[in-house]
Image (cartoon, rainbow, N blue to C red; front, side):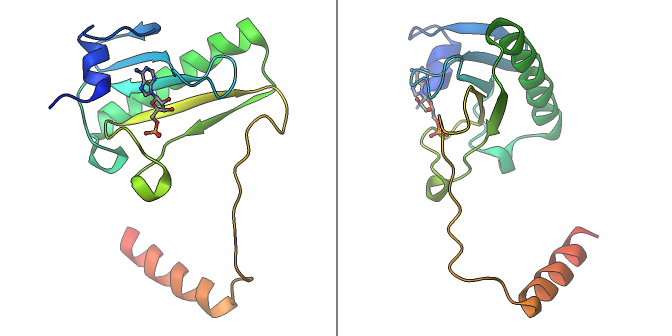
Length: 137
Ligand code: AMP
């Protein structure tokens, strides 16, 4: 079954498409978190960030920059959040890789909260540092 973003790609459902090339498309998010909230979406339906080829991810980053530059000159936001939700627990609802480009006009128009239960002990930092560094080498 097609994802909703494939249906948009194939013009089976309407969208406010603002950019398209062979690999990537960009259209306005139907829920405008702020004015100009845009989705950068792969043409192929890779289900999430981890399952997307590097060349496509790189191009999504380049198109994100292009869209932010255009939004900057049109609306002069004070900044942007570039957001990817990976997995249901992280809030992903459409399993077709996409970045949210969210212009920020104040520092309270969108909130992201971290909820640390306690401060992290030094031994935990040491364990994570060693494991992750060695996994990446
Ligand atoms: P996520 O929760 O990160 O998977 O984001 C999915 C996003 O897709 C949400 O922000 C939705 O508002 C947006 N969305 C869903 N359907 C459409 C649609 N038909 N056109 C534009 N945006 C959509």
